[in-house]
Length: 116
Image (tube, rainbow, N blue to C red; front, top):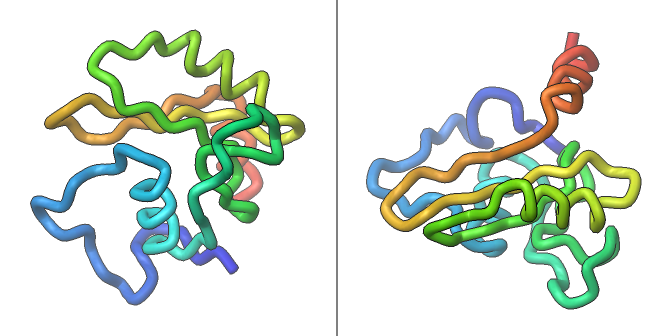
């Protein structure tokens, strides 16, 4: 069950110098550290059944990108096409940079409202 609110399970902070999320394995590991059950998905069919990261209790369908020049709207369009009924998001980073996530503002607000 997800405990992912505020700090990783066990109260651990993220170690300094740890590489940021850059592939599905790393994103899954980070989600697991924060209390969500996650694993690398099957990346061959482009459907809700084959996300980059399979995390059934995480609110978003995750598309992951590690490229120097991301075409963000194309990546997000891919996430929308593949997400089915879930909310799409893209976790992305370029070399020597921190990971970022792009998602719809309305989806974020919906999740935050549910936490109230």
